[in-house]
View 1 (tube, rainbow, N blue to C red):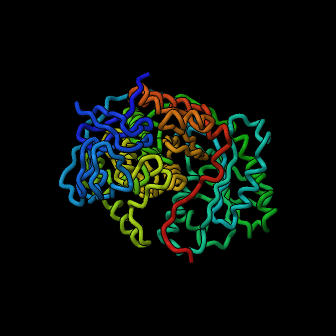
View 2 (view 1 turned 180 degrees about the horizontal axis):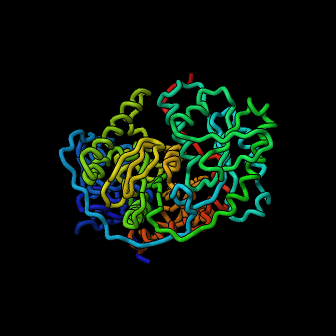
View 3 (view 1 turned 120 degrees about the vertical axis):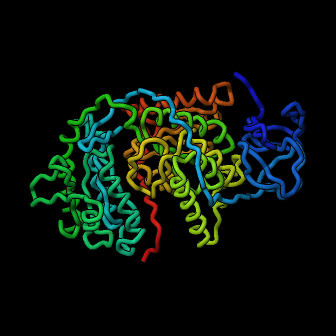
Amino acid sequence: MNKVSFVQLSPSDNVVVAISELAPGHILEVGGESVATVNRIPAGHKVAVCSIKQGEAVYKFGSQIGSATADVAAGEHVHSHNLQHKHDVITDVPSTNPPAAPAKLERTFEGYVRPSGRVGTRNYIAVISTVNCSASVSQFVARRFEGDALEDFPNVDGVFAVTHETGCGMGYATLRHEMLSRVLVGAARHPNVAACVLIGLGCEQGSMGYLFEKHGIVPLHAPDGEKLTRDKGDAIPVLTMQDEGGTRKTIERAVQIVKDLLPVVNANRRETVSASELSVGLECGGSDGYSGITANPAVGCAADRIVASGGTAMLAETSEIYGAEHLLVQRSRSPEVALALIERIEWWKEYVGMFGLELDNNPSVGNKAGGLTTIAEKSLGAVAKAGSTALEAVYQYAEQVHQKGLVVMDTPGFDPASVTGMVAGGANMILFTTGRGSCFGCKPTPSIKIATNTAMYDRMIEDMDLNAGTVVEGSTVDQVGEEIYNKILAVASGEKTKSELAGIGDYEFIPWTVGPTL
């Protein structure tokens, strides 16, 4: 094993990253020069390799991550006490330089081919609340199918409730209403959801009628006692508590609907399909100083393989693209795609400014404890998940993603809300990198969690699926990327993730909506 004490990510960088804790006086050999550390440098944190004057740029990943707020001596710790954010967003894009398409990669997995032609990696039944007023009812219905209730239906991955905190107290057909509707429709039509039932209260602003008229949901109604199953065309069973006669009657009716659906869903079988049917959401949470060195670049290599296979790699968290957007702008398919990304970033700057905040407020306490200082630094590491292929399209939150290749979906940096949007957009797999140790799980889409460092992986091995910390121990980024890609194919074919084995994912459905509660 190759033990190293630091890594320099680009020859032009004036800081390096400590791989292990460095004591004062530790000698760093950088570019033929010897630099002694001035103070203790925690693992994952930055140390200057030359003197940096106040106001001068600090470089990491070959890009500026901020400017010095004080004179920094060679060997000194560089962090919040002497580094501040400084970044201007590109506004003019006369041309772009998209890279050539990667060599085609032919791989397969075992998936569920739906009548729509889309392919699922799981086989769930969803009980979907259109409004918070029906949330408890949906939860009660799903709980009836816990334990051994599904033992006669081995091909059904589970029955889960889709609940949320809104659905009313908002303007009709407003942005907030439309965003929520996109999420709910995306859940109902998700390729990992073989069947579903919609449950509302009946008088909510986020009415069933809007889903029918605006999003083409076909309601399936029937007199009491008649079966309501999704095998009758594309129609979805729909119940409202007020029409059914209250809580108990709605629960019993919905439970019977699910029972009727179970044999239909259980009859689904996996079949061999092209890896081009993969739509993989790329997420990072609880990032640290290792994220941009190990896990995120390795995910980028896996993303390149997904694109080479003909699939979709979906980058998100727009607030964590800010500061690194120039890298995506340069490789956009067209100036129009680049400008769509810039427009979203400018929207975010204006949006957070309404609340007296800046996008540089994004790095969390945990991020900073792990060595990340500015949003530009965090974003440069986060964007590494996007690999090296051309950016093909930019999507609004929870829009249906049909474009193959690398795309961006506009989401917040809050992990559950971000993943909810990508799942609603059709992501049938999630790659989730974490340095501090996120225990995230998701239904109906499996989430592969990738540790950025070996210490955390060993400590939280019951929650981590892969260890990218081996990158600083002798493995190459590409080798770990290949490992991640193979894991995607295995999990897509039915192998359970750690979060699935732990039963996590029932409470992580968090739609992001913009607008006032009335």
